[in-house]
Amino acid sequence: FSFQSDGPLDMRMDRRQPVTAEQLVNELEPEELAEIFWKLGGERKSRRIARAIVEQRSMQRLESTLQLAEVVERACPRRGARTHPATGVFQALRMAVNDELGQVERGLEAGWSVLKPGGRMAVITFHSGEDRAVKQFSRDLARPYTVRGEVDLPELREPREPLARELSRKAIKP
Image 1 (cartoon, rainbow, N blue to C red):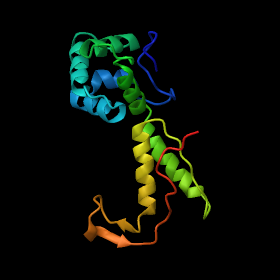
Image 2: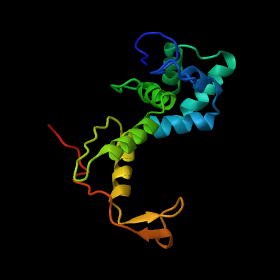
Image 3: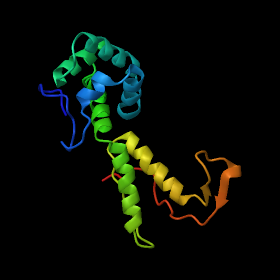
């Protein structure tokens, strides 16, 4: 999971999962890589990094964490930044390989399904993508209507009692 020392580009939390980070960086189209880096890693230079990866893999397959970290650092030199340029890329790949946002959504559904009437559910997130998923989930439950279809348009709304009430959207600090 780290580029601090060299290792295989795997990043699976469960070895039974079929897809590795090595497969993603060596097989996805540059647009797909850039989208993963942007959406899951918040990487502003996602397109540049994706192009650098595709260029490098055309010469040699990327197989190790240090290889990938070096490609990212060449594409986006550090220039005094405290964090390594590959930090967001590695986070994004780990999240994609393990379907972490999907896991959060399934966990929210499972938690909601066992919550007793009047119960409270607290969720701790570690990443802005997870935070967005939790906020969307709680907003959907608190709406006084359901939406028929994919898009929330007034003409597609059906009134209902809200299923939940949001107590707080803000971070709770110790």
